[in-house]
Length: 636
Image 1 (cartoon, rainbow, N blue to C red):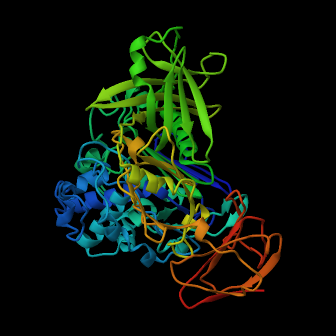
Image 2: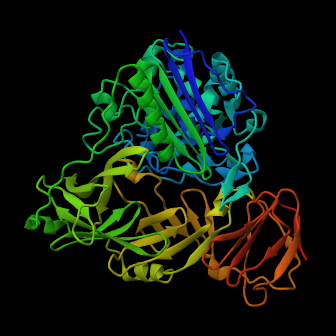
Image 3: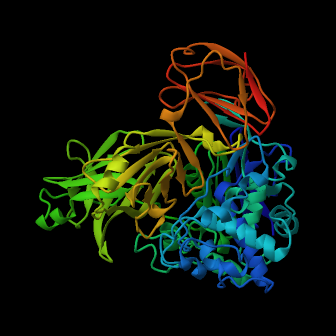
């Protein structure tokens, strides 16, 4: 049996497709020197799930046993955690809130000890749903799987990957963030158009496997039907089966064990079973697509871009390979939609405020349905919808014409809740089309709190804060700001505007605001709780803490030394005394400096490759100094 390898390499992109096909010419693969090493981001989840299933095949793990059987010290602030099984971690049905972000992403630094925080952080969290109720993307579950692999195998996770996944497949450039520097030439990464320090994901099971595209495609080939090098056929089938057979029809996630999806409608209609997994770090993105019964494995790794674009490229290559086998996959087509002028009166009951994409939206209805969304940047977006003959609402432009990328929404009532569902057809010209079928929003319920509690939160309205709790190398400082905002229209709720996205929280008491949404899908991923401490600092359930901007002192000319403390950022505002000045610094090796303008945008960081030691200070901006205890940064 011959194998066909298609490889394309540029500075920022590597593509590899592996096909079993007896009718093609002998392969001409790239050499190891030509390939680049990427973080696989969340494609890593397939690797840790494979490790778990290997241990299952060996009789060492029961995947339907409680996680506490393998990690006795795993606890949460709600007894339901005892019902979370190993399988639920792999198919995202655990109910765990989402992501612990403290020191998860490090630039130019792969010290694993900086991420030894997960179990401690989970102790403070409550599940967002009963374990097993529905699938919603959860990074922390896969870091728990990493720990289970180590506990059961008696090996550190990196060694396990090398010896039990890479070695049997003869993969010489596969490892983790811990040994990524030994795997080959890292891909160049960029931020703001400038070369940046390499990014390491220290949550290894969740996003910290590193490899070349050819290694990943060959790993994907281990899932081909009949290939038992890594797993039994039973375990591969189990990984490639949707967690719920009616998930697609009910707007739920279609994930398997480790895989993002265990079927895609256009391929199922062509009689082709596919499994796929994508991943995104701040700087690197990935996608792996496998057709097990057709012996095709496609991988795209990207520096910049997104996993969405990588997935479309994977699909195009898969379609080409299937055509060579005589299989034509009909592309997703835009639906034929006809609008009507009148909206039935019964839809008036659905007017009101909703949480949407973690933020706040207002639904109003007159001749059209209008959704006004309050965005993380403090602005609003307005979308208009008309009623259709089929009983949906379709998005239209200001003239009432259906938009080229059709989005259909509908209302659904379940368990006393009101939700909005969405079918979004996204056409990427000359690349392909994706159908995103998911929950979009959930209607808010009244949260009656006392005037005293409301007044306490009103005093925080408009307060900005900056991350201060992470290590000097944390990628969290690339997006370090949060702003608290309240709206009179929705008393009892508070908005946390973060650079990484907005979160609408329910006020619980004078100092606590908590997650509340129940959408049974990944629209309910990465939830957040927030606590205001007596000193005004903010703690979040993602493990990070923030310092109010109003507590940050101004940088003055008489400040010439900055004493550093591990995981304790030193922030200064840039006022009139130092605005437009140029400073130079002497700093120790394990330290970082960021400068932000008044719009909270990065204008300087020592993470830029070849960054100068001279720094221009913008008016009304901010500067932060980061390092380790005992070290000093000198300002000249």
